[in-house]
Image (cartoon, rainbow, N blue to C red; front, side, top):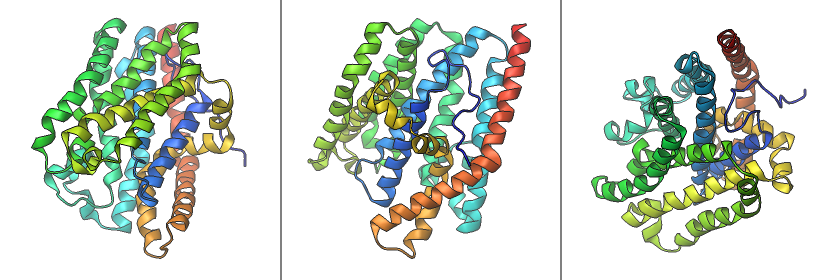
Length: 356
């Protein structure tokens, strides 16, 4: 069976068509998350940050394009999000309750209204559903950011995004003493908004890019990757800079270095025309990227089951990767891809009617 390499996608002011290597970037992100949870890779959490930056980039481009086209701005956007996000999310909740225990999803209103990242405030020992927190961050961002884009000019929008990049680390530093563990800073939206806004800022810059800017991204963005991710790795030599320490030093600097690395990696991915593009555009990488959403939702379920029978970390990783790919593939072909295409047909027909 041939892999589905192209799908209907929203018009984006930043990327006019589907860029294959962005699916490959998603594959890198999900593999980093799997490595963090299965192999206990110390900095694998940066995979989530890559997802955040990429989401801010794509969503901003899509909303800008829709704002220019006119007609059904909010209905179009949220229709697409609902069809893309809710079905797989609902299935993963049901699967978690049936495979493990329903009390993992307490208090239940948080899981109905995308407040899963608030769970530690009410439920001190969350279960294996911790991966849902980042979905909540993105959904909460989706409630605010479309309004901002609709109301302000692109120039002001860029300033807002840049202000968030500067102010969010300061907010993390100021609020660190208020929380007993690093999970609060790690999971609450106000403390992670800089990553999403960094992706938004790159969308604005990329949309109006000059040949010089594109060349700069192509030849120099790797330096930002090395500085961001390399600097973050270097700081782990000192316990005060490790996230688990919940210090102002760690909360102020670690996430910002991850931001620099993630944004630089995305810019490099967009501009590169050589080996990086070829690697990220391969069929396996693109396919893993396409099914990465469900892989992310259910990988901890698979890990818990595998850990009960297998003790080798390397073998665990292989089995978890295989299990999540199989599960996500079944979800993709049976449910997600048909719903995405259905939502795309509806959205395009509305757009065409408005345009005429």
